[in-house]
Length: 508
Image: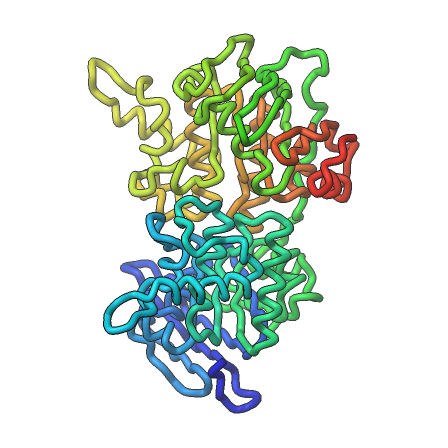
């Protein structure tokens, strides 16, 4: 590494960083100090300024005020390449890879290995293989198309791209969001190896348990300002961190369960012997009105594909899906929606939302017929209903004309749920409902899910977080390698048993 600053001098120091967007002051005097070889965790609710700060550090944005010192010298990175050349690499939550290029081509995009203007493919592939081996992922081929990789595989490529430069500071924005437990542990192994070489890591995550395991110090942002810095990651109480992030105390618990549905009540959703060739096999379960059923399992176990097949987004190879006694056609989303099924997908930004459309248009997207009269859309009624739902779900800000792209993760999730509430869905399928949602908003999402069940909606939840599945669900199905290996009431199984099942797959 090229770190040469004097001992005791921070690798990075940012003071008084201000960034204004029109009338919105996104950053209002941020301070951050990072030492070489440490994992410095950045905490804050959605909208606290974390993304804006790292975009300034990576020179995607320019600060309006403030100073940046790098290796003891005041610097001004005028453009992203200047930051990269200085040793600052950023891996964003929304990966910026080119699907149609190979792994090697993505890793060396913009700084190709060449001789006299000609790319040296064999040398590029060899260098790529070495970087992937360093990351513990030498099973990936340099010649694979990135578009054919899983989200976890694509994140590995993004990290490999960062390490193809001479990196002194690596910024990781929600790196574990698409990883299973084993992949997270491998990520932590790589991080520890990098810090031993003197590389500093800025680690952004909503998962406090990860921060305790991998972090050294914590800086907390709130409303565009630094409210605490230098906190020890291992020992700072969770209650203190939440209070700093939110400005109030939040009991990080799940809403209480009621009596639940009558055990003799008929199922609203019945899934029988459902299979998708090569993905999952012979999956059967029921969900009653007012019941929350959770699917626990590792990334790649088939959980998401089960939901998508139930919804009709994938065509089942065998098996049936029945809603209120009516069997649905395979692979027919329209029929599923007509029958009362709704899906909030894991990738809500790319699959569940019209990001550049206003809130009201996103809410009404699946219910446009109810607002049509004589071939015209009754915009006043459409907006009135959207306003009613925004108020009832406490979507913030309460501006139905605001583009969904500008909302926080938690509020975007509420907009997806509002769409299905307007539709009057009988069954709501939720895939990773708290992904990318901060601590304060998580409590609101959990309360919303429980209130939907209490109102009679049948809910199916998929989550990578075992605690979330157990805390939300009335009944739990454990999925491993495309098969259900366990089913029980949530109070009859604990977190350690779920982990044993997803890792070993021993039926119980």
